[in-house]
Image 1 (cartoon, helix red, strand yellow):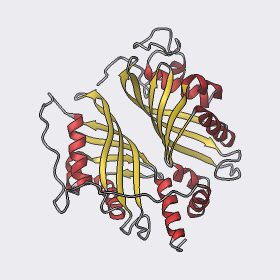
Image 2 (cartoon, one colour; image 1 turned 90 degrees about the horizontal axis):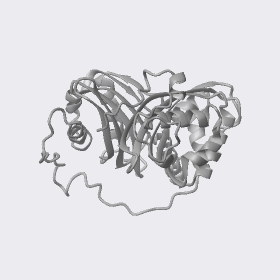
Image 3 (cartoon, helix red, strand yellow; image 1 turned 60 degrees about the horizontal axis):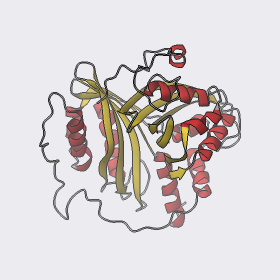
Image 4 (cartoon, helix red, strand yellow; image 1 turned 90 degrees about the vertical axis):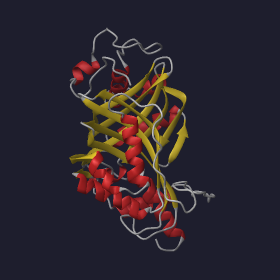
Length: 361
């Protein structure tokens, strides 16, 4: 995993981030000369587009047919990115975005992947997708993974804490979910197959042992094996071995959890609602070492059927893919902090439409 001497976001002032000097810290063939490294690129172009309102820079920083993955699905084209940015800035035109961290991998020949956590503060002074301005101050948690090559973002996976924003605006969550659900096009029925968490009536199997051992702490095996045990084999006791007793969890809907007990309750709440769910890691990379610790980037999916009672109300029977983005902080062989977002607002809309079709909404 990359260990280049690139920009450190948390220990660098914004004045230095925006004016880092002429020296390049890593090879960036095809990138604008002002960028010194891939972290500097993602932080600076975000700042210039959003806070300096150089929205037209999207045309030189996003591919013309960029593929954007969002909570409700995906779309193509940077024109939609431009339109969405204008809409958001019109509603929250004093937005200030603070980069929490950037985890990256890759190179300028094959392309880079970046996982960027941003915490933004703004006031709702204009009309937005949520309705008329409320004047309220809002803190928004967003996380995105970008595939970047030759100065262009070619593909992006973007999630934002919509539920947290709705609550901070003082809006009724149920009414807002209903409004947004009715706006969206009806999803066609589709066939569903086996979730492949287990073969027929057999119990779910553990992951096989790695054939090629890794010297030192194996981040890949640590996460894949233990998350498989927790989420797919329902070995919730493994949480005590994997997570630090004082773990901090930052999640959607303004979830701020502390300690293994709260985290276990969160896992159980999802599994109670989707009892047949299967967890998969779709992408995983990391940075760091055993001495200083590791910070990971993970894109994942949890596919299941809403057949259980719990935080999402009475079962609707719908099959749904929860997908999310996570950064873990791992020190001394345990997870001490986790930042996670998933498409929870999209899930609430699907549940509303299912209940409406059944005459329950």
